[in-house]
Image 1: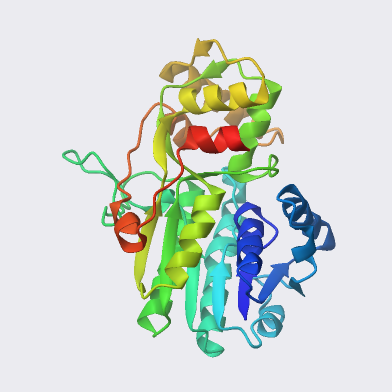
Image 2: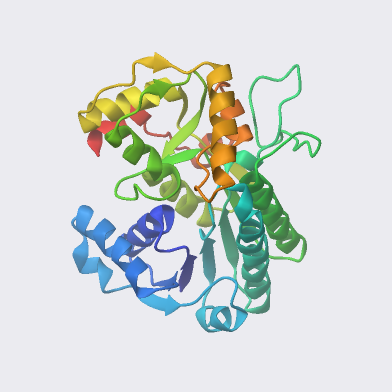
Length: 325
């Protein structure tokens, strides 16, 4: 039996679908009935509605240990996809509690219930910080605690520490560090919000960039790693590095909307995050942090040779993926 946390999110729902397609028995952890509808829509999107009824739904929360004890009964493998994503400074405590404490609970349950292997979905945000002579981020790039990181990145880094603790205590683990994950339907949460923003229209773009990957490739790699002999290792999952301008162009073409005409300069995003901070004092939800304003003008490149050599897989080009969806 396989347990998937965060089963109602982008990665979790696609993971549950692929596991069921392979004939696996899957327990899906969920917090409220409404979120289960997200999964149903994913199954309908791929015309796999017949598989939906095969899901063993388990009501629970990664912060509620008694509910986890029920969920872990008879489980051999765990995919920990549940996480809280926010770049709102006011939500630092919730980020740390959900991502770090929640992951600690999952790791402890894995150990207590004799789970054979755990796959944890982390982020490229935890991969580390380049030194002056370095140009490409790898799994071995060191995290520099002296450099400013977002609260989200810090919480995911702390969560990884809990997973590595489990590794030291004898639990077999693999960690995946996906780039910005692109996929259908989830336009109101996480990385999916970029679809919504492009659909509504953008005035500006920036020349920065980062690593992107499709949800299909993330899930495919996760399953392959769990079925492999790999353990105690992390793997970068990035199809390619794209500038934000290029990504917006691809999405605008697919969604048949206008491409933003103006390039935002660094001073403009600095002013924007300051205004965003000021409005946040009066209750407006923060949309842009200082860290985000900085990264919007820098391009990050990632080495994905490790996962390709380990699994012998190739990632689908982002342009092809967007056009196909």
